[in-house]
Amino acid sequence: MDRATMTNDKRRMVLRFAIALGVTLCAFINCVSEPKESSTGGETHFLMACNPNDSCGSTLACVCGICTRPCSDSSVCQSLSKSATCVADADRPTADSCSDAPSTSVCDVPCTTDESCRTLSTSLRCSRGFCRNDSGAVTDDAGSADAATPACARGQVAPNEVIFLGDSFMATSHQIPTDVEELARQAGVLAAAEHYRDISSLTGNSLALESPYLADKYTSAQAEGTVRVVIMDGGGADVLLGTCDTPPTESCPVLANAAAAVPLLFAQMAKDGVQQIVYFFYPDPVDATLQAKMDVLRPLIQVACESSPVPCHWLDLRPTFANHYTEYVLADGKNPTDAGSAATAAAIWTTMQQNCIAQ
Image (cartoon, rainbow, N blue to C red):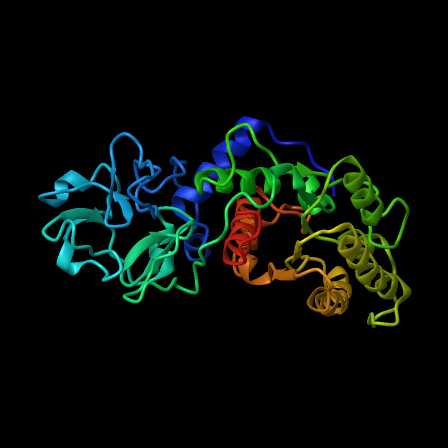
C-alpha cells in the first residue's frame, strides 16, 4: 500500500483545488480545472459570522452579523465571488437583518442547496437562501442557534491534544491530517504555527493482527503528551493482510480479533481522559475479496463506536467516495488520491464542526 510521499507544495496545491471547487460538487463533475485559492471568493473572511468586535480583514466589515461589503450595485461584489450579488437588507435572512443599518445593501451569495455554496468554500452551507459559514451559528428571530451549526466553545482543546491515529489510508501521503489542519486554520480554529499530532503509520498499524498495534501507538502518544481528541481509522491492515474463509463471516479470527480490540482501545482512552473520537471507516476497496472482509468488519466496529464510553462519531466514507473512485482512489484500489484525501478531510472537519470537536 506504499507510494512516494507527496511534496508539501503539491499537497497545498491539491487542497486549494479541492476547497475552491467544493468537495461536494466534485461528486457530480470531473474536478479538472485549475487550482484556486481556498477561500470564499477573493476574500477569506467573506460570509463568516462575526460581531462588531471581530476583524473581517482589511477590505470587509461586520454588517449585521456577517463579514461583507456594503454595495450599491452587484459590480462591487464581483471581486469577492462571481456568485456574489448586491442584496438589500429587506431581502436578506431575518437573522442577518438588524436595526442599526436598516437601509444597507451588502454583498451576499444567494443559494438553493449546500452544494452551490461549497463551490466557494467547503465551510459554507445554504441557510435561509444564502451561503453562510459553518464556523458561526446563524440565529433565528428568537436568538436560538441553528441546530446544524452549533455555537461551539472555543479553545477547550489544545492543538497538540488532537491526534490522528491510523494506517496507510492516512500515512501513505499524510495529506488527510494536513488538509484538516488547513480547514481548521480557515475557520480560525488553528493558528498558522499550530499543528495536530499525526501518528498514522505505514507499519505496526493493525488492530489485532501483528504487534505493535494501533493501541501501542496510541499509548506512546499519550505518554508523550495529553490526548483529548482521537481522529482515527483502523482495521484496513487486518483486512488486507489477514485471511478468512470464503465467504468471510464474523467468526473469522482475523475479523473477530480486530473487532474485539476496538472496545478495549476505547476503554483505555476513556481511562486516560480522551473526550472525543472520530472513527472514519474506509470506502469500499476495489478488490472484491477485500471488500467482502471489509463488509463484515465495518458493522462490528460501528457497534463498538456507538457503544464507546468515550463519545465516538462514526464516519462511513462510502457516500463520500461513491461514484467517483477514478478521482478519489489510487491505482492500488485502496488508498486515496490527492482529491480523495481532500474529500476525506472535508468530511472529518464537517463532523468535528457539527459536534464541537476541538473547536
